[in-house]
Length: 487
Image (cartoon, rainbow, N blue to C red):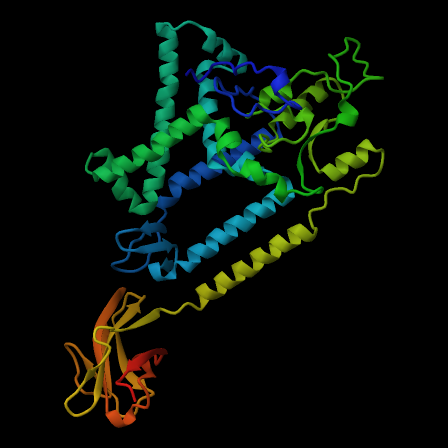
């Protein structure tokens, strides 16, 4: 399939209100290049997003000796995630849950405010598709030139130009895959290993898979991802209300449409000259004059195209604009529009949820403990009866030391009179014992607690392990169960 073929002609009887057909088997949208505020915003956001994606892994952050100095790093081998001065352990996966919740609510808030603004400006599919289309523009020309190129018979010259497009796409796709890999290891080391062919085969495979999907989706699938594959297009209307800002056509002003008058007199007719530049500039092929549709990604390029036409004929801008349905209906009825209502119950609710979740996460981060303890009672056997009539229980005791300094802890028990502690490889028959844990590691100890029969009141009774950090005096209590014969 040629990347520059003209979209297939679909009988108008199968299309309702100018919508994109349910499935376009051949061809793809060939958007016209436009200039304007929305196009400029998209370029700047592309530069910022791709700059962050590829350059952020090279930022350094000093965490002390023995610690990685990459500012943002997902260390799979070391089972850590680093974000500047924050170090997340696997046991703290709830922070990831909080970030996902913030991302979801932020998407709801953006949708309530401005429709599919995420899709039009920030989605990676949109960003890379824009970049791929710009490469086509550089090599093959604008929309009409690309369509004409697609109709030409295959020649050596055509194959060379098409090959150049694919080559540049492949370079961008490789950089996309490389950009993702850099977040999972030292960026400088990975780049050197990759280009000297010393990296692990899995690294090249990962780059190939991610880059391959980038090449396929941004180069060939394009608007099919937005219209047919992305679930957001199917339920976006549930996130909108009458005050959400969406790309809208002012039919009351534009209709009845007709070709541009030679005398530039628009009295008794609409301002729309039916030039179809709004359709030609749309990356998904939507005719916004038939109302909001699921294929519209809210990028605003049709607004730039239409504003340029209005300027040419000396007409007011805004025939197509970012506006709410409430304002549109009011203008259509000749009433005063309510204006842009950013603050309303729906947006207040989303912002309140974001504030609560963000506050909880920030509080948890500021007050997070650098010690975490897990106690697991051994079940086989539940207990052992000693020759003196006492009972012994076994426990797996784990101490997570989340700083890079060795720590010494004092372990005691509460809840059972006369209980003693035996540590495999350490103290025996002691009321308290010292445990040494190296920095940035998990100390695992096998502990036996023995209790005299006279202190046992039931077959299952609580026992509390009290761990005291020797240098700071920090105390952590963990309750477990002590098993004994039936009473």
